[in-house]
Length: 334
Image 1 (cartoon, rainbow, N blue to C red):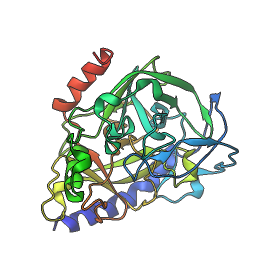
Image 2 (cartoon, helix red, strand yellow):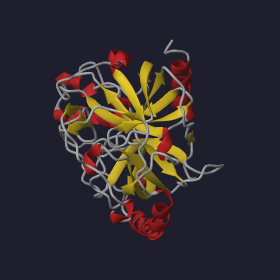
Image 3 (cartoon, rainbow, N blue to C red):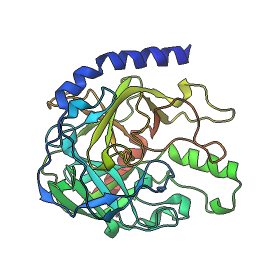
Image 4 (cartoon, one colour):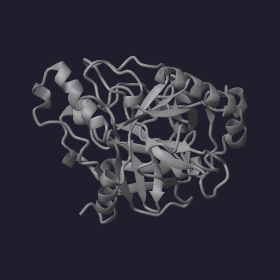
C-alpha cells in the first residue's frame, strides 16, 4: 500500500511540474569571470554524488533555451529565487578517493553561513576524521553558472554534524560492517561553512523537525551528468521517509528522507544542494523552503540500494542536531 501511495504521489508531482518550470526557467549568468574549465568525471568522496575537480581547458557548453529540456528537470536562473542563494562549493583537499579534490553544491542559510552535505567537507571513507576538515581548501562561488559567479568567498571555518562519523577501526571492518557504518553516518550527513563575507543575494529559509508537513520538493544543484555541471538545475519529486518504503532486511533508516522523481542523472555534483519545498521564483512567506540537502544512497554490501530509479537520499534535519552545530560555526568553530 505504501508503494502504491508513492507512485500516486509521483504522478501528482508530474502533473504540476510544468507550472514550476514556466516560472523559473532560463539561464541568466552574471558576475565575475572565472577561469574556463573542462570537468572530468571521477569517483567522488561518497563514490556516487560528487564530481571531480575541474581541469584547465576550453568549455563550449551553453544553454540556448531552458524550455528545450523536459519537465523532469530544467535549467535554473541564478538571478532569481531559489537559485540566487545557491552556488558551487569547491574543496581542494585531496584524498585517495578524490585525488584532484571535489565540487559540491551549497547555499546561504545565514548571511555568512552555508549549508551543505557533511561529505562535501571531508572524506570519511578515506579515513579522514571530522577534525581533518581544512577550511583553507574551501571556496564558494555564489550564483555560479557556465564559468561565471557573482561573488567568490573563502571559508573561515567549517564543521560537519558530529554524528556524521565512522568508527576508528573502519578500514579494518568487513564490507557489510562498513556499509552499516556508512548508512548510520548518512542519517546525519550535513555540515556548515562560515565564510569571509556576507551574501549579496540574501538567504534561503529553512525548517527543522518538519516531518508530516511536506510531501514534495525540488532538488537543486550542479549535476555532472547534465550540461557538464556548469549550469544549475532543479529536479522535482515526491518526498517521504525511508521507513515508509520496503528496505532490505536488517536495514532501519528512520532519519533518512527520500526524494523520488524520474530524473536519474541529476546525481554527481548535487551533493549538498537544497531540497526546496514550495518552490517559486518570487520571494515571500511559505515560499522556497529548504527542508534537506542531498546526501548519498545507503549501501548493502558496498552497493547502493537498488530501490527506485531516480531516488535520492538526505539526512532529516532536526533542531537537536542542527542548532548546536549552527551555534558552533557561527562562533568561528569555537
